[in-house]
Length: 360
Ligand SMILES: *Cc1c(COP(=O)(O)O)cnc(C)c1O
Image (cartoon, rainbow, N blue to C red):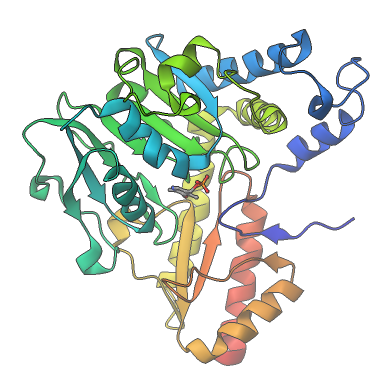
């Protein structure tokens, strides 16, 4: 068996310990004689798995008691619709802060279910910045303000939770979820697809303040209705059972790492190493404002695009996989989520240094 360092943006690398535990429990989960994939979601065994995962997530993020944690299907993109369907009534407006491709998709989808107002955008800078808070044009009677704490494609990350007063703040936290502590109480809704930093694809976590539930539009599909799902413990219909289980193992792994403060310190160090190397080289570059560079997704360009194919092929040979950048940005992108060991970042830097020497 050989594993590569997988820099995929998502679905992304998972901790080896999580995969090994899942492997050891694959055929017989804790004496039940069956795999988690084969269990009834209504049975005692799976209900305990779901409750355990939910409790671990609540502890990790220090989620206050007046918030519900849901595990839904439909991905983060499902929540692009779920958020307005739950929070916007007839004629209501929501504000969107657009700092990359995902924010653009979110505002477009929200426009189908209400008025989605672009209150700020960094598109003029090709999404290499975050618009200063003072320049946001928030609406007078906004039902919520939506932002994307980490834009996975551009590699732009808010370093602080923005202040929007009493208006509920909604975060698409898909690509930096659980990478650092977050003040949940400053948000109305936080949602995240699992497949970047929390588990496998197919499950989406939604953390919602209880007073924001119960006002969904009548056309809201029941599976996206926060109140109905909360009342049913996210089991209004069959949940994504196996993905939920793996998320639980990942949360346990995170607790074993020392929790979010400990993982944040590692993530800071990993990202700083890579950016320092890029900044110290004339061959590689990163276009993002250093004040808002992502700790999770590091896009970088080579001095000459003609070298991209060779870089990718040689990286693959060296066991460094999936470094190709998103087509809208070009170049390379190294996603270095929680589960990417520091040794993987070191190996990438060593490879980049050697490639530069040969081709620079
Ligand atoms: C990947 C991603 C999405 C899309 O997630 P799906 O689960 O595929 O719908 C949305 N927002 C962000 C920030 C992402 O990184």
